[in-house]
Image (cartoon, rainbow, N blue to C red; front, top):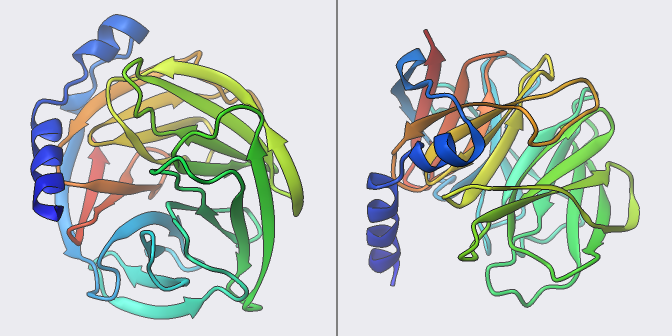
Length: 269
């Protein structure tokens, strides 16, 4: 079964292009401005890297494994060397899909995967690595729960993006307060993207956010608190097997990992 999935993904990424996005949403072609380089290999313990968040020290990053993995985070450097392992207290990895970090150093773990469409309630764990303590944010969707694999933190809110398995290709955005409790959320915006969204990140200056898919990266401009799809900035291909996690290194460059253990740097030229 895994071989069939990898074959399907390989075909998807090979034929994935930005052309539909250029036509439908007026994304700019920016491929010539980015250089993609493999810079490391993830430690064996992170065999299915599905999320990325910046660590406290520059050049360090947290990651985790996909559904069914241990409820742990793994800290590594740009070469892929394992630096630390932290168990997230009072948590369970039902389907961990992405990570993000706030300006206080808390790591948010998105346990919101819903591939089988059987879940109705979802959790995000806010984890403080310094105190080794966690709190739980629980939420439900106002309408039919989508599959979600991506989010980022910005100015007190968490922004989630559906994976768009459906034939209509609509990606929906949801805004969730980064506060403990039980929340109900509804879509705040949507856009047609001809690929499944697997991770998201926002630049340190908050002016650009990125959506990673199988085969390409889509960039959007922001305007302060206004996080939406109204300002498509660019699209470029990134075909490196099963890409599931993205984080910004600075305001232009990005780090991307895949579930085959590759660590890649995307540099703006």
